[in-house]
Image 1 (tube, rainbow, N blue to C red):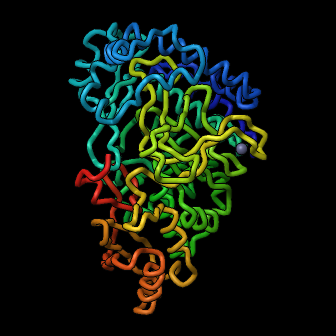
Image 2: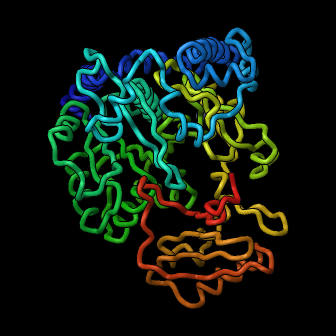
Image 3: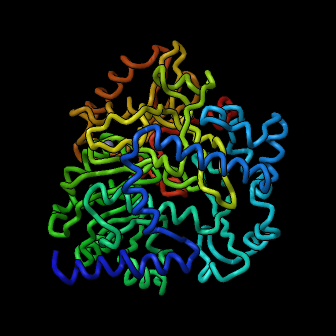
Length: 488
Ligand SMILES: [Zn+2]
C-alpha cells in the first residue's frame, strides 16, 4: 500500500468517518470498534456476564418507557428484577412480525413524545439520516423492512442501530485485514436509474472512501458501468446483495474480465445467504475470501462469517436464542429451531425475542480463528422455504443448491427458482445457459423423481430472467402455500 493510500485510510477511518457519523447521530463507532476487538476473545462466562448486565438494563428500560413491553411484561406478571439470568428471558413471549406491524408506535420509548408522528410525516426516504441530529430535538428516523412476504415492517431508530451496524462491519472487515477507512465499494438497493447522482454520494466517496454502485435490476450495460468504476476506484472490500455480487461475477466471467488488478481482498454478501453455488462462483471469479452477514434491517447485523467460515454472533449487542417451540423446530436437525433476536443496546425501539423467520442452531465457539463469540449453525433456510413432503421428508434450500451444483446441470443453468404450489405440485423456473438441452431437463427430472414422493408433479418453466424482489434479494425458493395461510 502506498503512503498516500495509507494516509487516506487513516484520515477517513480515524477522522472523517467518525466525525460525519457523529453528526448523523451515529455515535461512538471507533470507541466501540476498539471494545469489540477485545470482547471477541472474552471467556464465555465473561461474555455472558456482559450480556446479562445489558439485558437487565434493557428490560428495566422497556418496562419503564415502552408501552408495548410494559403491557406485555405485566400480562405475564414479570418485573424487571425477575431477570436474574439469561435463561429468565424465556419467560417473555417471542415477538412476531405482526406485533411490529400492528403496534410499532407503542414499541417506541414513550418519553420521545410525538417523535414517531414527526418521523412518519418527514419527507426523508426510509432510513435516511437527519443531518446534525445530535443538536436537534427530534432524532427519530423511520425505516422499513420489506420481508420475504412483501408486507413492510415499519421501525424507528435514532442512528444508534446504524452506528452498531458500522461497528460490526468494521469488526468483520478487520478479521480479513481491512481496517476502518479502507476503500470499499457497495452495491446498494437502488437501480442505476434511481441512483441519485447527488452530493451525498460524492461526499460518501470523499469522506468515507465508499463507492456506491447500483445493486438491483442490473443489465449488462449497468455491469459495464460498475466494472469501469470499480477498476478506477480499486476497493479493498466489495459489498453487495448476494444476487448482485453473483450477477457481477457472472458478467465478468462471460466477458473474460479479470478483476485481479482491482485489488479486492474481501467480498461480503448481505441481506441473503451466500449459498454454496454462489460462493463457488464468487471465489472463482474474485479469488479472495467471501464472507456473509446475517441479520435483518430491524435488528441490524446479527452475525458475520469469519475467515474460518463460522458465523460468529455479535453477542455483545445481540442476544440470540433458538425458539424451543416444537412446531418451529421441525425444520432442521435436532438442535435447530427458529432464531430469536434481542437487541441488547438501549435504543428508542427495542426488539425483545424477535422472530427472525430463519431456522438454525446456536453453539459455543470452537472455531479455529480463536474468537469466542458464539456461532450460528445449521442454517437450513427460512421457515417458509422448507418443504415438508407428504411422506414427512424435509427439503431444505440446500437440497436445491446441491442439485444445481451437479456437474451436469451447473453450466447449463444460469439461474433458477423453485415454487412450491401445493403439497404435490411445484414449478421450477429456469434461465438457461447456452449448453442447456432436452437431456439436461431429463437429468433434473430424474433427480427430482428420486428425491420427492411419487405423487409430486414438477413443471419446468423457461424464462428469460428471474427478477429479484423489491428488497433486492433473490429468492431461490418461493412457497405459495405459505401465502395461502398454511404457515405461520
Ligand atoms: Zn471463527
